[in-house]
Amino acid sequence: MLLACSGESHDLSSDNRINEKIVDDETNNKTNSNKMILQIGDTTLTATLADNSSAEALAQALSEGPITIEMRDYGNMEKVGSLGRDFPTNNESITTEPGDIILYQGSALVIYYAPNTWNFTRLGKIDDISKEELMQVLGKGDVTVTLSLPEE
Image 1 (cartoon, rainbow, N blue to C red):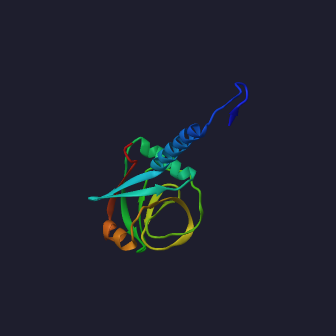
Image 2 (cartoon, rainbow, N blue to C red):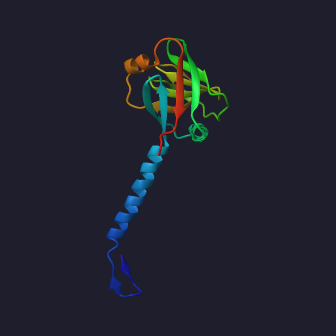
Image 3 (cartoon, rainbow, N blue to C red):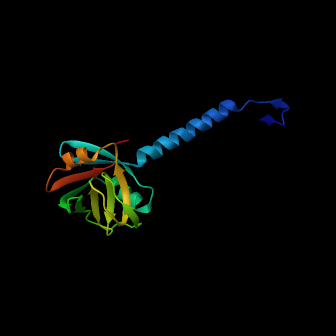
């Protein structure tokens, strides 16, 4: 880029590298802000939140403090429990996969470990876990799950 007023040329490639660094930092901050922690017994899992107003509302609620949910097994495919408040829904036809985190009827959190097709609101997905690993972590019967945001 040339600076016409001074009559001198100025290489802004270093300025572009600075701008790229700022963009990378903003991307990294966004990446960190779209994560959620699930504490299940002695196991800590991370999840990537969906890009919708429901997940944003959940993240906002978690910014006020952790949410602990008593979850029960349902239909040999999921764990479900009340969030204790209503969240906005963004229902769409979804076929779940192991690790999907779903908002059901605006106030229930569901962690799927088997497929199911229905109109749901996707909240996120547990990172890097197989169905077998997830079933081992969730166990049989009731389980307590605490949701929180990662520490910055």
